[in-house]
Picture 1 (spheres, rainbow, N blue to C red):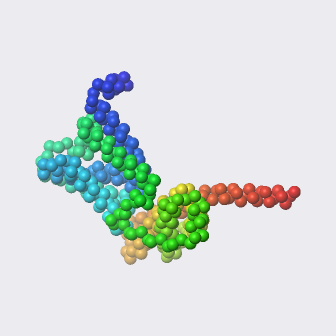
Picture 2 (cartoon, rainbow, N blue to C red; picture 1 turned 90 degrees about the vertical axis):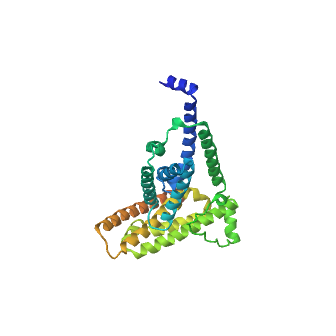
Picture 3 (tube, rainbow, N blue to C red; picture 1 turned 180 degrees about the vertical axis):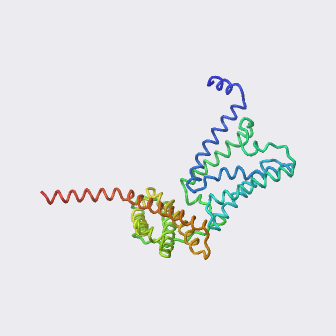
Length: 328
């Protein structure tokens, strides 16, 4: 079977196009997928692929290239998802589900109205064996541009950062003292890394303050926080990072997952708790949300202990040395 595949690959041009295109898409999809997963938007790829259906239908009705309609509705879908997420308490995965199901339904209706004989399956999933030379080269060029963008984003995060049209403006940073600036430089950080670190810490500080205020306003959240000493842990973690900025890569879970998630979930919990009328579904949601908050607090405590592991080992070694010295 393998020999037949290799023989067909050497003899049939469409198989070569399909293999090259699949490899390129696999590489760039994996790279982009890492960012999508970290942002909690794993459904985005599925959503965009379904959201282009109305664009394809309208393109068929107007007699224009399918690619144009697909691009327009793909961008429209991503804009709507960002808008819903930024202007409501709805989470990103829920916003994605709302958008792609709506666009999919609209596309099916438009195809029915247009009396098109277009195969819906091929529009949604395509057929990689039908890839032409032009399609393959477009895929390669776009993939190279995407990979280049990711590469430059990793090298120059501040310069490549794009502000969302629905996002909040950055808070201006206070001027650092010469002592603090010297400590940053002694940590081996470049000017760009220092600016990124200060901006990130400013966001984390605000989030910790908001979490603390929300926790103190609700008895249930105070109980969970006291169980894991969450408020004190977050503040100590923050102080450690400020004192040792070079350790920021070790605190990815704290900075990018635990604190933002806890801030969002506690806000939603407070909003649901303050509703004057609550049904059984609301109480069920509050219970599930409380369990998730409990899990994040436990994860935060465990991550802080892991972050402090080297310091704890060093302290234990010093204590052992002191004890041996005293005995001698």
